Image 1 (cartoon, rainbow, N blue to C red):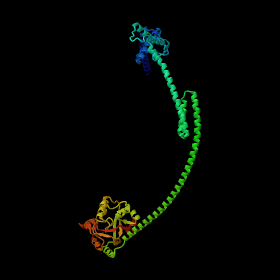
Image 2: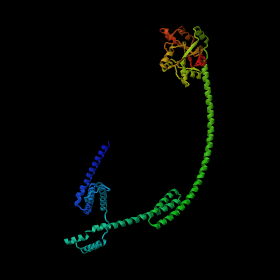
Image 3: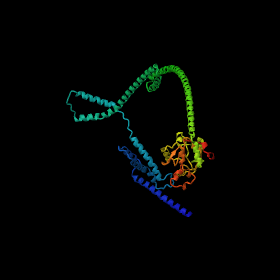
Image 4: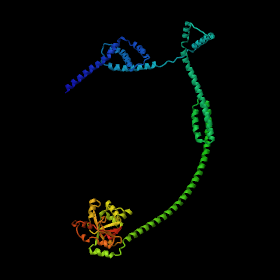
Length: 493
């Protein structure tokens, strides 16, 4: 492996040697080509090129720098002796010198662009103007003045630089104009300062201190811009006097303001005190009125509750012939009525004290977790005037319970046992079929109760035929409320 590494290293050195020789040869060729041009001739040639009116491009500047570098490096390749050890290779020296020459040429271009200062020969030119005026005065009365060609040439030669003279004289004119402008500006500034001083004095006298303070700051800046030191000093002294007057007036105005503010605060405190007293009095009256209103509302609510209780209690009044109803039920073996509901409703039944019609629940805003009757049943109840009645069945497993389960209105049904005493209530009705059936006979009399098919209630629904199934669904309709004491099995839940 070492022999292969040595061979690879050797070939890399040879390749590097030939590459360096090729680079140096590329540098030597332009140096040899410029051998006919001496090093002293190059600067003058470059100077002529730089002075051209057309600006040099970057490529042209680089070319000039390369030629100059090639000339300067002639001495490095002149000796026949090969220099083995040197700080830089010829290629690196050529690159460094070329970069420096490029910078030098760019500096020469910048120097050539600087215009020299020219001083006008005013004395000689003024003499020529006097000579021209003398000639014009001599031929002033002659209308047709003709000059010979030689005279014209002489005039051209003597006054050819007249335009240049006028241009030179423009500098003097510009200076005079500038000085005049400065003088006028100084006068304007001086007048502005005077006006500011007068305005400040007027503002202080009228008590407009905020604007006076702004004008004092502006005047101080304007005085600083003046060039005449005596004027500066004079105006500053006047401004200091005005500042002293301003501070005195400010102190007096502040004292007035504080006195006025104190008076205002006292007045405001008195107003607040009076307002607080009025507010307390209004609050007292308001509380009294609230108490009166609350007591009235409590009284009205209590009376309303009492009226509601009495109205519910009146619903429990018995029919005058209630014993006849008891005999019919006893003779037909009816000892219990039934009402199905979802188990989640039991707590609400206990809290509200019994079963209520859904019309009463809506009117009193009593929520029921899972009402057993659907929208269609409620609509039918309204059509038949049954929305304020609670439906009870003679059988413990009425068909409507299975319909409610199927429709998802209840999920965990329980059957409440109701005392038959509810049949004795004065407003209790009896329906021979489902109360929403058009063929059903409904009424509150003993005759209506006797129309019910008691012979069917001990049989199973599936064993019934035709209209028997409809008569099996006979209902007891209790008006508005069934008190909890009439629910005989409520404590089992």
